[in-house]
Image 1 (cartoon, helix red, strand yellow):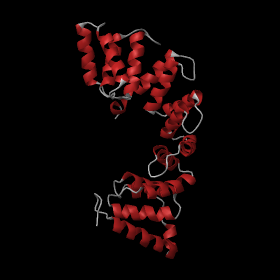
Image 2 (cartoon, rainbow, N blue to C red):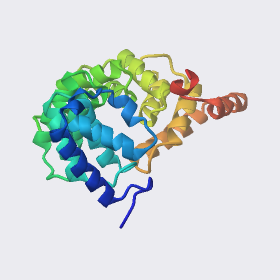
Image 3 (cartoon, helix red, strand yellow):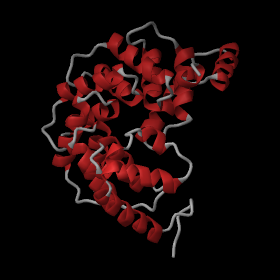
Image 4 (cartoon, rainbow, N blue to C red):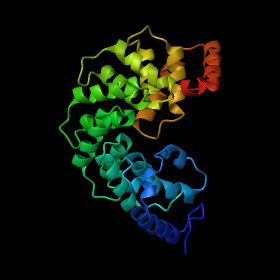
Amino acid sequence: MTENSQGLSHDAIGQIEDCLTKKLHQNSELIKMSSDTQTASQQKDPRSSFEHLLSLAILGDKNAQCALGYMYDDGGCLPVDYDKALYWYEKAAAAGHAHAQFRFSRHYFDGQGICQNYGEAFKWCLKAASQGLAVAQNDLGQFYFEGKGTAQDYRKALHWFQEAGHQGDEIAQACVGWMYQKGLGVEIDYEKALFWNQLSADQGEPYAQSNLAEMLLLGQGTAPDPEKAYIWGSLALMRLPEGSVRGEAEALIKAARDLLGQEQLEKSNMAINNWLPTCINEE
């Protein structure tokens, strides 16, 4: 008999499911249970948390259904079971739960536990994004940008990236900055590009930091500032993966460094070492 890290075995989980399902059908008093799923999901005992969520999920509580789907999806308290995760995600998604719609979309996009289907992924992502879920809005922007599951449309991509960006999604903010910087779906507007890249860079997004460094070095939307360009380029380089973008960042850093004196370099390196993203500074 195998157990997960919390000591809850596959057999025990099955027994809980069977037992609780029977109880729900036999005991009408369970219908009066509270739908406080947040409290349930925060319980340390995985068995009691699971029992509570399952009972509510079977009764049609979409919050519990989504939480249960995530428990099967995440594998933190239960063994990973994509079939069961998708079963509960779909129920919650059909009931209008935005996070469940988003997770269901991701599974379709990645082909995780289900046949990959960009059309279905787009459909469910649109539902979640339309409810204001920032991560779904960012994903929807990517669908339109890449033309996956729908026709490519840079204007719609920009719209959804902006919707997510206004909610603080740093990846979406970087995408908006990039589109204004390169004129994708919109006329080039360096001031707007600088604004969005700065928002994202301040949160630690490396691609935005690299794009911001380029704008500061070239004086796009602002006066040239090789010192700040060097700082942002160096910060980007710490997190950028290997590839062409990393090579571009290295070239930017070198070009900016060549324009700085020794005192400026020392000051800049100190700023780099002391830098923290805004999300940490605000804590």
